[in-house]
Length: 314
Image (cartoon, rainbow, N blue to C red; front, side, top):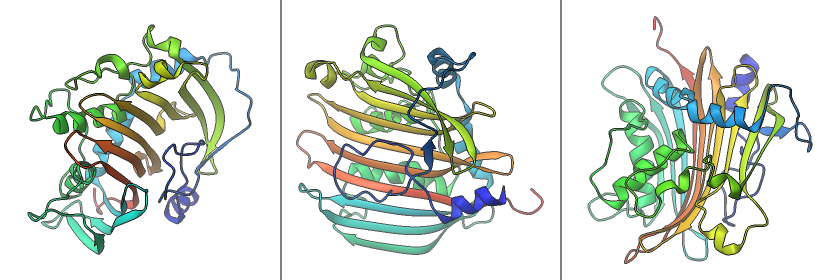
């Protein structure tokens, strides 16, 4: 356990084996998972259906984010915005101590900002940064957020997109409600959608010591460009702990364009063990986002959580 915690404190490596589609500066440059080989494993009781059922039934990812409200921890956030040539034009670095008890929930240890990031009213200019604030900064001030089936937002495209992202992170493969023209494009495990995807799994090692399976869903290579453009989820990779089959990591690559919005995004979330709890340790995002009549947004961020510990007596 001490060795695992030390690895988490010293550095984090990207979960996805393949390179990001968006070619530009990437704050997440280190790898945490190594495949045991290029040969797909064949196990007597394991099949593609085993992994699909586990993904659709899983609640452990949701629970892990809920559990952080019990902990003190350090959050280290690096955020970058880009111009049309993918050159960095805005930077944010934050180091925050999150307190579980007392009046001060969030304490800035370091806060550095450069570039044109804010509106005159003090709010972030970019929707992407508003999304970051919505998911993470609110969590540091209070308890961690998680998807709520009854949440419908304020009816706007932006509010709906926030809920869509949360659904994709916590419940991939399930339908996302409230966004026009998306419908069942997220239901990649249905009989109709399976004809477009390849499903495979391999044995691997996570953080040098944890035996895992990497289950990968990716578009078939022989599809026409027209068919590929209609598929929103390009890749979904999930990391399972072999010992209890709980999910330790998730990578989503999605790209889609219609008359209401245009996006090209990759998200990655990794977990680590702290005592008996599984908790989020790394979240990364790379993406372009465009809404008609608004300026295109390009951003990436790397979120690290470390030094998780409980108050004495809890």
